[in-house]
Structure formats: C-alpha cells, structure tokens
Image (tube, rainbow, N blue to C red; front, top):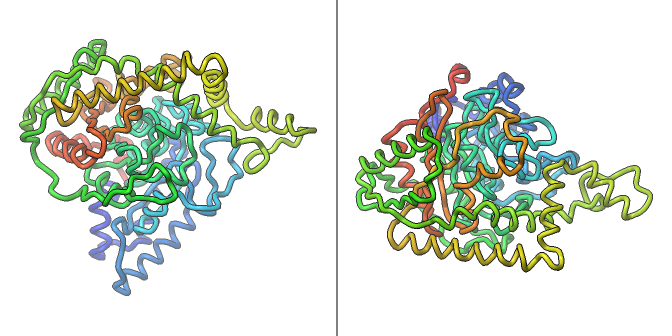
Length: 486
C-alpha cells in the first residue's frame, strides 16, 4: 500500500480492494517499525485512527457517501489542533496542552474521511530550517539518516518520504513546506496567503504563515487542496472565494506557458545546484514552455527583511505564553513577574528565545522606524517587483534550496542556517502560491527540488505546471531504498 499515491489508495478503498481497518493497521505497523530511527512522529493516534477506520468500513458497507480522502492515512504537523489531542508545537511549553477546538483545515480533512494517523515533529513553534530545534528529538532524512529532513515541517516531510503516511500537512512561514519537501524528494505546496484557513494553527508570523499539503505526488497535493482550500469565517484573513477545481484538466505539456528565470539572482549557485536547475529548465523547454529573463534582483534582501518582520510578529504572538492561561507553569515562582519569567525560561528553547529577543528589539522605541518600518517598505518593493515580472511571464522558476540535505549539526552559525531559505522566503513576503517538485539527485543520491511560484490566486496554474514537470521526470516515484520494503 505504501507504494500507492493517496488518490490510488482512496480508489482501492472505494472499490473494496482494502478495508479502512486494513489500511490503518498497515500504516500503523510501518510507523511502529520505522519511526524510532526517523523521529517523524511525536504522537501516533492509533486508537482514534482505528475507530475512524471502523466507521468508514461501516459507511461503505451501508453505501453511505464517503469523502474525497476516504481511507487515506494523513500526518498532521503538531502546530495544528485536533480537538482533544495534545498540540505541543515541538515545545516543552505546550507538552501538556490539550486542544479544546479543531483547526479548520484539519477538521476539513477529518470530515473528508481522512485517517489522522499522528502528529509530526517540528522545530519549536515552527522556528527553524532543520528540525533540530524540536524540544524532543530531531527528525531525520529517509534518504540519509545522518542528514536533516529540513524544517520546520521536517517530521511531515520525513513521514511522507518514508511512506509512513501518504499525505501530510505543513505550515510555511518562510519556506517550511517547500524546503523540507525538496530535501526529502516529495511535493510541497504553499498556497496563496488566505487560501487555506489559519484558524487553529498556532501562530508564528501571522502575515506570513500558511498551511499547505505535503504529498508523494502533485495530484495528491491537488486533492488535499480541494479539501482544505475553503473560506473560513473564523479567520479574518481567509479569502471568500469559490473552491478551485485543482484536479480538473491536468496538462501533459506547458504549451503557451511563459516561465520567468531571474538569472542574476541565481549567479552564486553552487555547481551541482546550478547543473540541476539547468536540467530542470531543459525539461520545461521540452514541455513547450518558453523561458524569459526577468529581474528579481531585489530578492537578495529577502533574508534581512524576513527576519525583521517574522521575529517582530513572533515576539507579539508568543507573548500569550505566560504560564497563566495554558501550557507550562513554573512551580518555583513566588509572584506574578517570576511566574512569567520562570515559565518562559523553562518552557522555551534557545532558538525561540533568540527570536523573541530579536523581534522585541525590532519593535522597541527608537528602532521601529529604523528596522521594522523600513523592512515593510522593502517588502512592498518586492511585491511590486513580482508584479512587474508577471507582466512578462506566468510562473517564476527558482531552486528551492541552495544545497541538498545537510548533516545534522552542520550549521553552528544561525545566520548560515537562515541563508538556506534565500529562495523560498520571497513567496511568503508576497503571499504568493509556490510549489516544490522533485527535480533530481546529487552525486550522493540526495534529492533536489524545483520551485515554481505564481501570482496571487494562481494556485491552480502553479499546480498544473508542477504536474506537467512531474509527469515528464517521474522523480516523485522514487522511494528511499531502506524504506521500499513493507
């Protein structure tokens, strides 16, 4: 079953080839066998999954309507709420926090009859690019267990690449769906900002965060978007638009599609990454797309702009974690000030503390105009640069990451770690839809990803472009060798 796509497995279930209980037991056994060495799941929801599977089998036996994800095992990043289950956000602060309500996106998946099989590992409060900032243990890359699966959605990417589930959710603030997808050889899609509800997602950077699917194929990502991509009145940033038909008329070529290439921005790519990107451009040409030179040189300022805005928003969002209302509460505190200080000192990890301090500094009197307001102005200039580029092209093509999967512990300098997001951050700053699709392997058999970025609300064209690329290359069919067997 693990070699099937989510669409294929759903169809097998609907046709009666497998029962939902058989599917659930099969993937729970895979998790039991492999998760200890991968660190992909923080919690496996075995009882909930089996109860749901029994309900699905009854529904099918009674010829009742079944949802679009019927029988598909789904992994949920542990910063999204499943009602009555623990949501840790990869942090000691929330390891006792039981969610009192559903995340809208996850409730849609549950209502579509998906099997919510477990909560996946992540960098604490989604702050990181390697999954090493998890308070519990790092996730590992199924292609090389000494390497990172990327972050912050590293648990989800590791679970899907190893086929411990067939689809997962991730959250993307600066590339945290696309970068881990690229490093593990799977598909990761960040929708247009507001296309998927953020209600029930624990906030990091509210103007940047977006939930999206992580899957083995582009068609599965389209299927997930058909379920999750709905208006939600509980989210003030949710777009009140009709649902999109992501799976309709998926193309075999890209005739008439103009692909923008920002060559000057890519001049410092390392040789193996440059070679892979050139090969990807050749595939796009073979698909009858036309390539056009565009100017996005301003994107070289993405990293400083992002780390000013994201940390400022993070320091505001994390102010609610005070030891009073929920989560960790210090037993040693003798007064209210100590309760705040001690709870946060014990509850937050070093990366979270670092970003809170940086963000608070950016918003402090005397520095807000020098840093925060200036970063907002540069963000506007980046949006304008994209708008100008899209007058000359339909889709922008970029690498996802400047390197393939790196060994755990490689980056002691946080700035060097931040630079791994240089190609992904701009899509979040612009609220643009972007996808990572596998594009090949380096000499050590570690995956590369191609990134395709569209204008706002052009989610369907981005997915269709990625689908045509996938059908030409077939890299999404590859499974890490040590996880191929049952």
